[in-house]
Structures are given as C-alpha cells and as structure tokens.
Length: 124
Image (cartoon, rainbow, N blue to C red):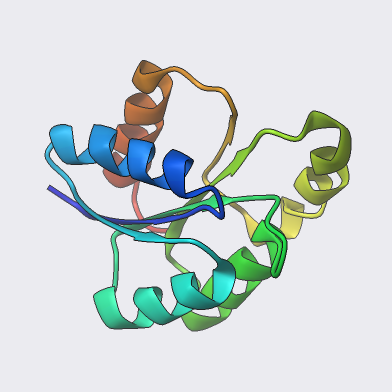
C-alpha cells in the first residue's frame, strides 16, 4: 500500500481517482489546487503524486516544479485532458522528468497500471 496525493481542480475527478486507488489498496489524499497540494505534500509525505496539468490558479508544471524543489526524487505523474491548450504545458515538463503522463479520459486499468509501474520503479 502506498500513500498517494492527487491534485486536481475538478473535485469529481479527484474523488473518482481517489476511490479507484483506495479500492486498489492505497491510501489517498486529495487536493483541489496547487497550493493545497503542496501543503498536503509537506504534511503527508506521499510515495507518489498525481497532478492535473491544467489548473486555474497554478499550473501542473508549476506544481511539479515546486514538488521537485522540495523532493527531487518524488515519483510524479501528470494528468491532462486539454489537448489544445495542454500541449505547450506537456512540452515544458521535459526537464522536470515526470514519470508518466495520463491523458483524460483514461481507463481505470491504465491509471492502476501507471501507478503500479511508478511505485515499482526506483526513485529518480
């Protein structure tokens, strides 16, 4: 079992991901934005972070950059659904070395497979 932090400004998406991961045996904490996510990151010290890429107050790139500053070895995956406006953000992730990019909508099996692969991989 791993502790996973899910950061997504869409509460329904965050709750749905949390429900799936909890059923998969993980402990899940959710945040609805970057600031809350970073605060929970410090308080919870998760094993893995799943962050939405496109959020209104702080982009996923900014969140990942901040989490990398706090813990350079953290396992991080990003979630994105906005193909048209998400591509420039995806391109800017390169140097931040995220473990995976999941494009919404994704299948439950893809989510669980990605989480399992990231948790099985050695920290960066």
